Structures are given as structure tokens and as C-alpha cells.
Length: 211
Image (cartoon, rainbow, N blue to C red; front, side, top):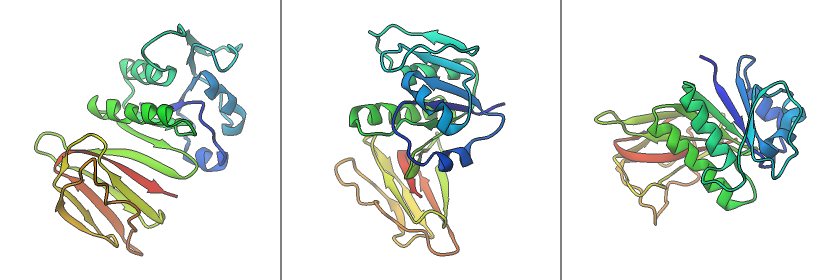
């Protein structure tokens, strides 16, 4: 099935880096002011959603849902939930990390919602690629980081993350625990010519790979 790319309104400087990650058969969802990125990304919407408080309502042949301005879900969160309802299994979030910390944290929570729903998802911006690594039942969560990324960080933002192992990195870790109030696994480095491995036995973490 096609991957769903959800585009929010946060700033993007390096459009070329984002375009390199897009696929010809992606399904593109533009959320309100995310529409300003159409030209830079070089794609047209398959679906548009928003309350249009930060961008004028577009003239488009794409399917569109207009939302009320007073609501619980942000436009981007609504879009993600709607695309889960429509059966998408893989997601890429673009234009969701920006100057407003409240919007950024709210948008990153979409990654956790998608992980809970059993979907594959990551977010990307001008500097990084972000994904959730989570344990499922008795199966550890795992991820790999190749040495094209100069740095990576493992952060616990959900309150519980144990049995964390990091291998093939400058700062290895074996069966560790990262607490919310002590984020010590920041700015690690992949060993040259290797692929670092991160695994989590209990809970879930954010893996941030820096370009």
C-alpha cells in the first residue's frame, strides 16, 4: 500500500533533502498552512485538511475536509487519525517540527499515536529524522543507524524505558534505563563503517538521527 506523507506548516529550508525522501507513489496530505510547501516539495495534494485559519482555502481537485476552528485535534493530528482510519500502514511527517515548541511536541505525539496503532512512522525536518522505538509484548523494539548520520540521540519522553541497549556506537549501553529527568543518551556517534543498533526491552523511546 502507498505510504502516507502528511505535510504540516512548520518551516522547511532544505526542500531538496525532503524531496530525496519522497516516493512517486506516496499519498500526499497537506494540512492547512502546509499548503505553502507545495511548490518547494514539487508535489500536489491527494488530500487537504484544515480549518484554514493560517492559509486560504485552496481551489483544488483533491479531496478536502474543512474542520471547525474550535476543536480538540490539531489539523495535523486529525489528518493522521483519518489516514489510519483509511488503512495506511506507513507514514512520513514533514513540516511538523518548528519554532513553536507546543506545536512541535504536539506533532511528535503523533508518532506515538501511530506506534500505538501498530503503524510505521517517522518525522523529518532540516536537521534530523525521528522515529519511535518501542517494545511490543515480549518482543524488543529495535532500530539501526548507519554511519551516514554523524550523531544520534535516544530520548525517553514517555516516563518508562528499560532494557535499552546501544551497540556499534562511540558510547555503548547495555541493558540500561533512561529516565525522563536524566537524558544521558544524547549526541552519540556511529562507529565508522558500522551500523549502530538500538533496542528497547520495555517502554519506548524517541530515536533522533541527525543529518
